Image (tube, rainbow, N blue to C red; front, top):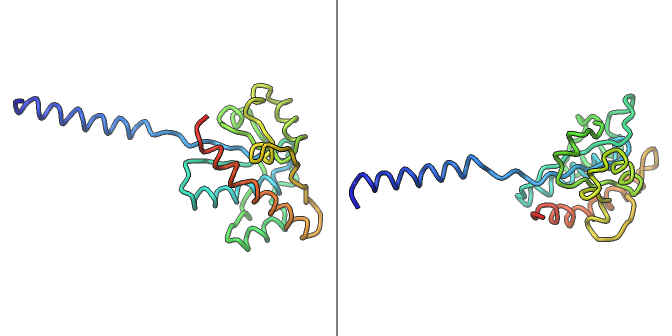
Length: 178
């Protein structure tokens, strides 16, 4: 091999490395959905982000509402308190309504209840194949995540435990390519 072909070969290898880096794979995208995006889905998003960070997983998450109340956009106080005890600050979160753009970009949509799932599929029929309840996606069995809204702290504690119990399996499954 002459010097020119060695230099050319090296340049091609470097270009290939840069091209591969430029086409970085997008993370798997999960949208957590509940009624108002102030309790269960916020909890799921915060806990999932912590799990993703700890596991160094290539996953991105958002949380959304199927029926957001524009007058009730702040996270529920008991959710803020419980997550803060785990070092997670959701106090700046503001509820966001699920949009067609969210649905189009999500690889998986995980709802907190069967009614939420039905509503998402009703609003966005093309999402049916990628929309599941959190429990269904994590365990294969349907069980609604309890709604703690306006209830005593112990109900919130149970809701957080329920969400926390499903997340490792759900995130691990979503992180794998289909």
